[in-house]
Length: 294
Length: 257
Image (cartoon, rainbow over the protein chains, first blue to last red):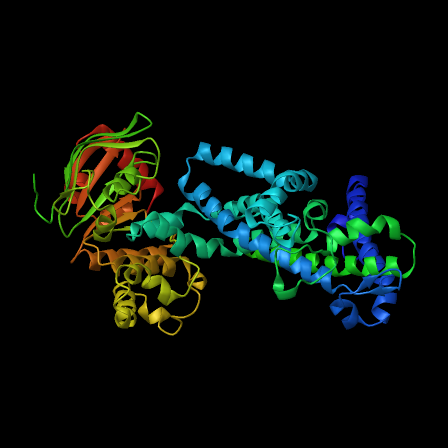
């Protein structure tokens, strides 16, 4: 029985061991059931044509017509914007904290970043709706500040501390010998960082970015409050137009669509797309973080 | 005051960390083109002394050097000294070899490439010359583009020496360079040190007495944060002046061979 468990452990295991095996199995089973359910429930939508569902922009539950194009587009745009906005600040912050701050200042900085990284999305959403939306509206002279751009910037602010603190961990974990060796060869501290420390920390930094992206891709409530909620792909890639991404669509319609047939199946299909995307990002991030430890 | 270009000297130096003295009353003039071994038990300040010669402790908060440290005719703790230029004159080899996650070739030319990016055509010759000087060429010439991480520990240490030599330092500081190596690799490094001292001044921190006997020309014995004894290696081993030195040598002789 259970050939995948280490044989020695199997023979002389105590009840506590079996309870941990049960818990681990439960987690695994949940993951399998969860993903199977998502794909099973979305089968009716796939049957109507996968390509059509992925590319069509029309979403009309009244006519039972469902296209995920606008949501996929919105997700890609806001996630890319978030990354473009967050990455430079996150990396500069991580380099500064790891390489140039005193140990005490670094701890304070890291504490602040970790608190920010742990703050719930709804708090960011409220601040986004109350402040960022208005600033975007006033600054760019828009009628409404709820746009793809606003959602992207807000997501960028949200993922910035996550990327910064994980990237900082990756940089800080590079042994001091790398810095000393580069410095002893006559490099400046900044050059020592770029030439000797960064290449070694790179897998960890990429892992941090991917995990941040995973959060950006899945964030619901904050985006819902500032994205505008229109299922459109704006003309000319207009970032200052309202839009929709997958989580915000799910957040808006899930409650009213439960058990409603095709509408529900279509929302589950959106969930499956999102699940696949975040799963791929998390897998890539974990793989790179594991490589860092080698 | 200006000193000779070849001068390497401590004059009444005190090194403190957060106000606590680590080394005091250091005054010593190192011989040129010789191997000076800094002997002393763990924690006696050997590494601190070595690192202070290339100002590698500057990044440590609370670390202070008082007195004069002269390297190649320059007082190196004087304001305005170009510390990055200084470090090109003083190479440093660490206890455990630090190899960058790239190829053997890129590791050798790492420092040279940074200082002379315009001499790109010379990179292959530089790599070959210094790998040969570090007696590593024959072992790696067929895998220059392979990851350096796959080399043995002894080869890595010789690679780190080749990398330091490629910056063309006049002085080479070695902090227990054979401490993490097997006896065969240690012998290879010792032979390398012999050949290097013809052109360079070598200062090596160690607590391996047997090795010191084999390679040292001069000895600096650190005890209790100060220079306890100094002089020619033969005299030091044959006629130690102080009781603490005798105890160290007897204890050390039984533990290292």
